[in-house]
Image 1: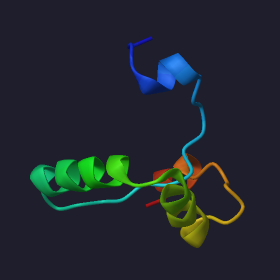
Image 2 (image 1 turned 60 degrees about the horizontal axis):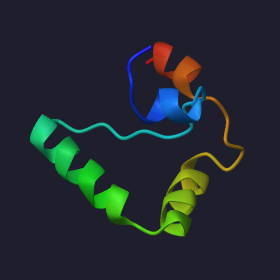
Image 3 (image 1 turned 90 degrees about the vertical axis):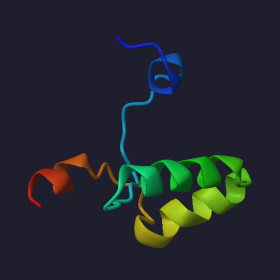
Length: 62
């Protein structure tokens, strides 16, 4: 297992993601979201995935 957030905290469920055309935009967005208060992040997830369903299965069908 690669060291990092997911292995440290045992994260196994993907509940939210964003797509961007450019890697630089994606990195900027990630850095912005990391600075947000926790409640803002929870609101972002719950806006699109209120049941907190594992969405990686849905990505396979895209």
